[in-house]
Length: 106
Image (cartoon, helix red, strand yellow):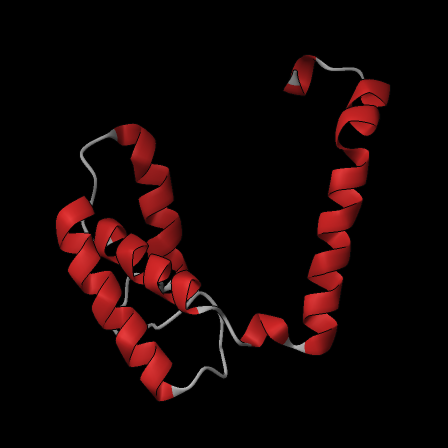
């Protein structure tokens, strides 16, 4: 599996799925769905933001922490990974829900 698989086996096993995902990404960019993230995506971002705002003790997680920090995603004013067109009400409720859930999972 993975690095040990031959290219033909990778194509046979993952080719169609990869093409479908690429098509969905292209479609979402074309229709600008990417600029309107779902409530769940925004809430999940807030939970991850709460997790990554603390510098980890584990050196393996340090790389991910640095990536989040360099991207500016740990900034409390950052609402999502990318610029978005979501309504203020949706953003506020998603962030409040994420902050509440983060207390239980982070």
